[in-house]
Image 1 (cartoon, rainbow, N blue to C red):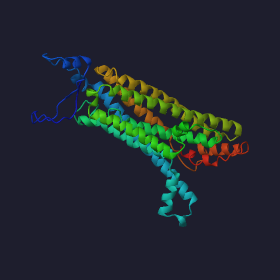
Image 2: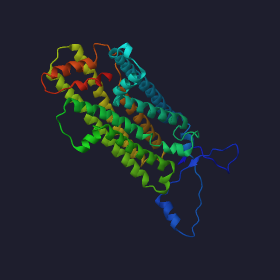
Image 3: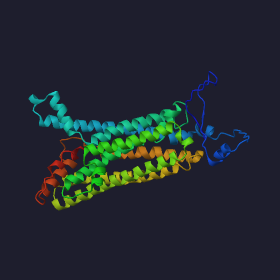
Image 4: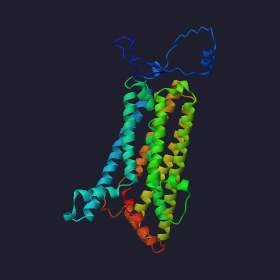
Length: 380
């Protein structure tokens, strides 16, 4: 494969400091030739199909600009949502704190006490999606020589570690809501670790996955796959396995939350139509996002597996990398939509009030204290 990258070449002409990167893979035929002695090999370059593919309009549109525009759009939406959450927190602070008691330190403590997984997921989405969008727009997935080879290869996985973090934070949030709804159920240590029952375990899990992604990207940046071809399938299969585990964990939390909420709502039997509509809006949005995320995660696993086998031809290269890019960005966009803030904290018709009515009615049916469930849910 002949890829475009920024390579310094002291033997090249002064007005051509950048040269195409020729990637030679050590297949079995080359190994056989290396073991033979007294053999002469003549190499003649044939027609370079990549020279036509890279600047073509369909490559630039599908592989480069559509994912880039989606990334920047998702970044803007996540920024707006995060600002909306901040406005909700500020309104709560103004409502609950007398004017004479408002100080910077008190406000800082109030804000920190209200931060949770939704805010972490949105912040991680902003950082991840902006970085991916810039790399795709500037580098063009090997179609330009704007980036050094090591940088282009480092981001070959589309920053999968960032996607893992967003998925973990989202799963931890919904799983924590399930735990608060039913505290009597017992779970295994592995289940509690994957669900994120402890924030320490959640951050440890994130650190491990990010470290693995950085390690994999570093191997790609150092071009280890040409000397050790087995590293590429191993890394791809590991990433696919992690994606499957996180997908199952997320779906379990999201579906369990919906089932538990609907059960609580039906048992409470509230007659307030506005409150029920608010709760139904949250559950409907969660259902659509969960179904779409599961579809994109499955597609991502298939794309990862195909990337290790059929990526050497131009047509397969376009299909695989456009799928990987658009898939990952769409998945992050859906996670962002899950944590859309409400328009006004003082609105009577909203999911938070609906959940308050449901949980208040359930106190008559259960001997549990579910009041801790309310503060984080209205921010969704």
